[in-house]
Length: 79
Image (cartoon, rainbow, N blue to C red):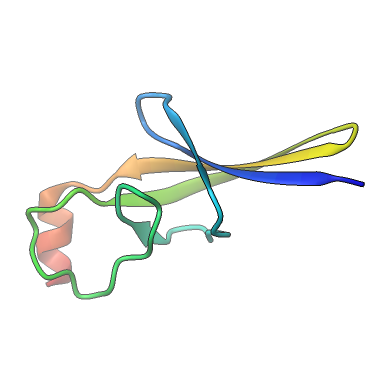
């Protein structure tokens, strides 16, 4: 039996477990929930998934979703 755990990896190296399965280039909030487009404001903290990594060991699978901070000017351009 393999136990799968999913992790959000923030730009500062902090990790947070999540239940969601994210995709590349998906925009998410601080807790890993998807953002609706266009964003309501450019004054929010938003992240983009830029890398997905799978670490398999005996009996466990860790899926790491690496996040990058989306700058305000980029959010503004989506409005």
